[in-house]
Amino acid sequence: MRQAQVRSSLERNGLRVLVAVAIAFIFTPSLYILIISFEPSLLPRIPAWNEISLKWYRELFQQWRLPGALKQAALDASLTAVFTGVLALFAGLTYRELKNKAYFLALLTFPIFIPGVIMGLSLSVFFKLLHLRPSLWTVVLSHTLYALPFATIVILVSFSSLKESLIEASHDLGAGKFKTFKDVIFPLTRNGILGAALFGFLLALNEFIRAYMVSGWQETLSIYMFGQMKSGADPSIYALAGLILSISILLILLALLYYAFIRKRSAITEG
Amino acid sequence: MGEVAREVNVRLVDLSKQFGKIVAVDSLSLDIENGEFLTLLGPSGSGKTTTLRMIGGFEVPTGGEIYIRGKIVTNVPPNQRETRMVFQDLALFPHMSVGKNVEYGLQFTEHDKKKRQLLAKNVLASVGLEGFYDRNVNTLSGGQRQRVALARALVTHPPILLLDEPLGALDEKLREQTQGELKMMHRELGITFIMVTHNQEEALSMSNRVAVVNEGRLEQVASPEDLYENPGTTFVAGFVGVAKLFEGEIVRDSADKSKLLSNRLELFVPSGFREGEEVTLVVRPERIQLGTAAKDKENMFEAKIQDILYKGSALEYGLILSNGEKIRARVDPKNITETGSIGDTVPVGWDIKDCKVVRS
Image 1 (cartoon, chains in turn brown, purple):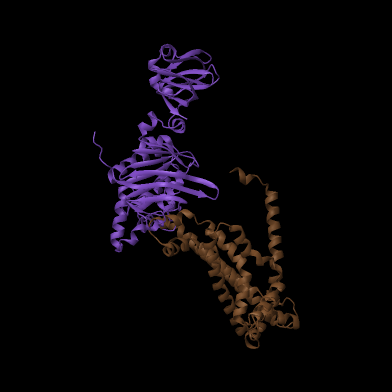
Image 2: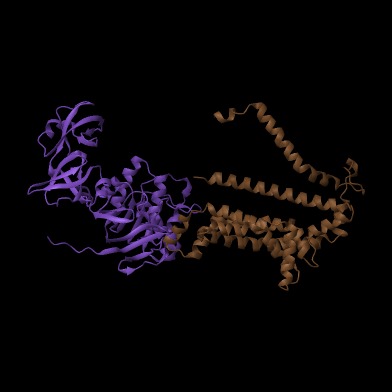
């Protein structure tokens, strides 16, 4: 009861204003891009009410190779998600068994500290040494390497809440290692594994620098966008940005609705 | 008197466990009989939990062997052992219902789903949790969760049940109740119970035998009465029950008694010790007399009353002896004529037969 009165209403309102300003600062650039994407002329400006048009969105699908690039990006991201998820899972399982946990963790999170360009360049050289032709697979491998530190941390957080005694209890009752994984470990760390895979998916999608260095003839979406930005303002690019932003917001809203639904359901079935 | 040879259910031979440089269990040998309730009692870090875990298969010994029902199991993993453990934190699977938790161990031997459910429901009823099959384990009270853990371990009818500090998380009232219930369960099931605790009162009241463990070594294993009346080592004397210990050297031995010199006090103990031998005299507070009752005792000293505690059925006195040592006496208020007050100097004493001597 006492905690609510620690802050004066002036403080509370001041904090609210601060948070609003921070959110505005973060989202205004993206929202601006979304708004000017509806401007039919070649000038990047806020459209008048009666001039709002989906012209550049149509351009995206008709003139440009958007579907193809999207397909490549989706494939790359999905494969990276699978590789990242699986590797992170193994990392999580191994971490528990190790004596020198710190060294293992350092090894897995080390790539974070390597600047993107250097990573991309060295991977490119590395693949050449192995006589691996640049392809979708080299891109996926590189993206997996990039995403693994983040995915590892997500997995370790998830695994840390898994009490060792639960695994011991499962063994005590007769279950072998695989059954214990299936019945005890996986259900309790499923969210962490999904989170790790999701990290892989999102980072791959957004990542462009490394792909630029090692990919061959397959262009991914981000390289495409970068190319467009540099070559001159074709307003389709704003439509593309607006599209990505809209989908992101939609997905977040869906996720929030899903969680609200889940919470409501569990509240009803509780005890 | 003829003794029935009890079958040995669990045999520990020179069992040792080292964690790096730390020796947790040091050459511990113990035979646990079929159907007995044996408690491993000791302070924190004494190695009792490590020993229990080795019996269950959760730690691999670094030395020695473990035999369960005659078969060597030292390196056998827990899922292939006949033991079942109730873990200290209970380890109930949070993502499964009560029923599914209890059934977990059955899925390897009973493949009929309906039968499994029936067995689970039966065992739940036997621990007083009838109707709890579909409940969420996370909504249960501590006592209820413990019963689920017990049901889960017992549903497969194991010959040996391991209990790791089962009463630790319970409050006083519940602890007493559960003590009785566990004892009754043991009697009804007739299987071997091996319990670990640091609470000596618990150990003494529940067990057939108690194995006192300290610093990885077995100090003494005996029935609760034996342990209390005839402590085998100084540690056991001090750890099991309350006692005053006088450590010193035998200065004279004669036919009927010996004299012990401890910290400037002369004490009389039973005969049979060599001069120069280092021993410890152990005397329990309830054997120490005060006032006029103390005057004719073989060991008698003057002591000053420091505090008096009223403990319901007894009065507990804290006194200081002439050499500065503290001593506690427990007296039945009905048996004394004068209670004395703080600051009074009164005689305290006990006979040789009221104390024990332990070789250091």
